[in-house]
Amino acid sequence: MPELPDVVVYLEALAARVRGARLEGVRLASPFVLRSVDPPLGEAAGRAVVGFRRLGKRLVLELEGGLFLVLHLMIAGRLHWRPAGARLPGRVGLAALDFSTGTLVLTEAGTRRRAALHLVRGEAALAAHDLGGLEVLEADVAAFAAALGRERHTLKRALTDPTILSGIGNAYADEILHRARLSPVALTDRLSAEETGRLFAAARATLDEWCERLRREAAGGFPEGVTAFRPGMAVHGRYGQPCPACGAPVHRIVHAEHETNYCARCQTGGRLLADRALSRLLRGDWPRTLEALEARVPVRAPSGGRRAPGAPSASRASSPPASPRRPAPRRRRPGRR
Ligand SMILES: [Zn+2]
Image: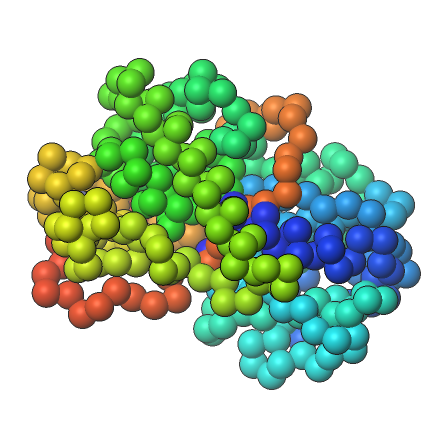
């Protein structure tokens, strides 16, 4: 799933191409991708693009007259920049936004249609798409500690919950936890102040560094090849491969719709989370589906701050190499402890 760094870089690339440009029209391959009915999509046509925002993992294009196009790429949604009027690719093509400067094509691989486009009018309607998670790059450690401390969860779940923290998903959560040398199943209410500080610093450094790195890789072009499995990641998507910090093999826990990768030597004092109670703890600390997690109702009113552009990334295109050993059998559970 495109996460904060991916969304930030998408928005920067879009701003460079469509700021001030006119949205001439939107072509939909299937009506299902548009999840809003009022205002009708036709009202967006003819308006200039005047702003760009990130709401968690959502991209927002602000059109003149107070309309906002809100795009959530979910897992497999991707954006592509094409010459004006480009044809929608068959099968994966969901929508084309035709601007005076070129066409933005939305695709989604796979059979499940989860990427979603909304057209909303006004700031209040836009705020309904803000799940209220803290912007780690704009927060201080006290606000971070408060956000984590509101509910008792495993760290992996807390990091990826859009009502707790904004823009972080499965991939960057694994990277942040590895950098902080903390276990994915450590509980939010058991963290020492020192550990909380380490997690905060790791989250900021990881997100900052990946924004910078993806920006450099795009090199002014439109970001293609957006994936949750990036060369250069320490543990995410690297099951069975050596941890870059210590050389021990990266482990995994399969839960809900994705998996967590971690280094036992660096993060859990050498303990494998194959232990039934622990993997049950992680799997149970999760809504049943990714949609449910991404659509959680905010637990508090969104705080006043504005948001910088930037957010989600797609995850889970592929699975890790055939596993010598899988810590826990894959099982769907509704979310019991
Ligand atoms: Zn390690």
